Length: 468
Image 1 (cartoon, rainbow, N blue to C red):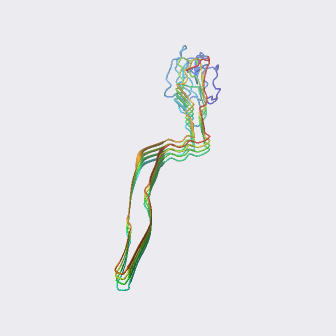
Image 2: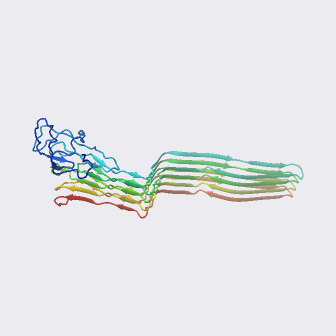
Image 3: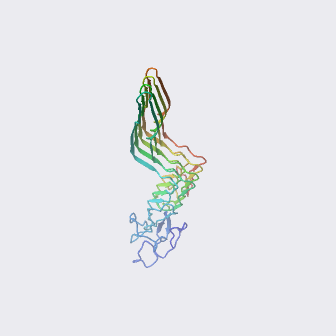
């Protein structure tokens, strides 16, 4: 029967008819009952319960050892071994039988059941740049000329212009964490000497981090130069009418290096760890170097990191010209109406940490260390370092350079000769936005109703001494 996954598989007085340390060639009766170290170093009189058909070949670290007071003629080379690494998420019972009488099993290098993830947003990375250089030249020309006495010249020009030279960059953004996820490390029960026992470092519903390293360079240019002319000879009439509705968008928006928001209602917990003193009945006294059940995270916002710059240099030249000229005894009428909107704004949102979620829980698992006499136990027992619903950090290293130029020069001219009438009307409705907004290096807000707990760590000694 294989006791490798049975919690009571260690029997303190197990009788047997053969000794695992002998091959039987020179033995005609029961082998001497030399002490064995099974699993965590419990002294057992009799062969290992894990020897026999279920035993595997010795691992690379199983070296011959002296058997103590009773010397075996043949050193044991077969060790029941269940592997150095236990798959994450399982319920491992790490065991290792002795390689000879009085020999202490070296144990697994690492036993892990943690590092499980559920519903986390992916990280976003951007390394590169965007160079946006657009040029628009718009010059409509309208001319009307009348000749001869009593002639009439009419010049009408109507322009509806919409120019979009905007630049938008959204890069290096982490995904949002999901909701109602569970990531948990299973229990670890071990009685062999182990360097690291880890059931923590689980994460659920965390927002991914966003990393941006690069630049956005935006250089848009618009030249808008409409011309409208009406000419009439003596005794004539000239009418020049120009109407312009212009919308020019040269804005730039950069959203980069932004961490995703944490989800809601997630649970991340480390599994419980039960480890027995591997030095029971032995003077070697090897212990687990590091016992970790904490480090779980749930519903935290991802970090945002931005390294780069935004350079925005925009240029607009708007020069409408309207001219009406009439000769002797004539009438000249020049009317110009301009509705202009120019947006040269710059917005930079960079290096922003994601917001923490709500109603999340992150907890470290139980750590129980059962020790004999004054076993030193573990160098480190960690059940804390859990976090839930925290806002992510924001990192920004860079600059925003905004150079916006708008030249608006409308011209309206009416000229009439002697005994004539000249009328020049001009109406301008202009809106120019050259603002710059920078939101950078801002940490995310923490969530509500979150719980982060470090679980109990029990170090039990048989003689009730406390170990610092």
